[in-house]
Image (tube, rainbow, N blue to C red):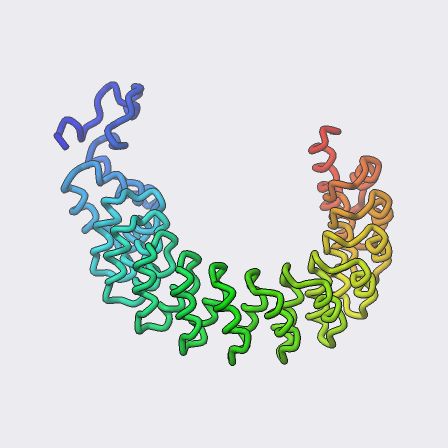
Length: 370
């Protein structure tokens, strides 16, 4: 870049003109950049370091003299120029290199270089990066560091065959990553159903790719946590949900109560459960019918009544009946429900509680009625 390019001209926007300066060069050239680096505002210093790339080899000196904390901020910033990321990826400070590996805009060529970094922590973030190519993930899946293999196992871009291999890993955290991954094959999930680690089975039960036959197997799992994840899984069939609705553990029944696939007759039964968390799950379920919701307006728990007031299926009449609820939290949620009638909102703007009045006032304004 020539000296002429480095300095703004009278026609440049930075001097009141209309022509954008070359690559965003700032007023005062490299001296202007250095002046910004003296600011107490880190955001301004980071911006200055990013702009330094416009001034040729001067950028190297400016970056060398910057504080580690400022360089870390530059390394993780999404707008940092690629040339600066290249420079920081070679810095002796491993924290800086790991920040570059975390940056969502770091290009493949830099990730290739960082995948061979001597520090496992840097390689770990390459393993988790959304832009890391398949061939690098394959290579990192064989790394001796278990945390790094775990990072590969959780990356949604990791190929199926690599996940299949990691499902047999000796480390439970690696297998857990495979169980979590949305790209994991049915075969790999099947192999993890009987895993000795409870957390692995939890995640298999939660994974939306887990086939019905495996969910049926997990219904009999000794861990209530595993059974709860089956109860919450959107793919769990009706007959399994009906069975789990009678589980002795309330958290399992609560999972059934909140599942959008749970049939009406099961919701009807759970609406009478002795535990409020179960009834709250029914009250919050978007498929709970109007009649069941209306029956829950008299529930002893204000938490259950709040969920009724929030539910998009709650009728105008039911919402109006909650105007006199003793809990201001319930009344505020009535005001926020899009089904609430104008008449009810006009009543709530006179509520004794400021939060309720404010919510009702906003609702009327959003409808163009104030």
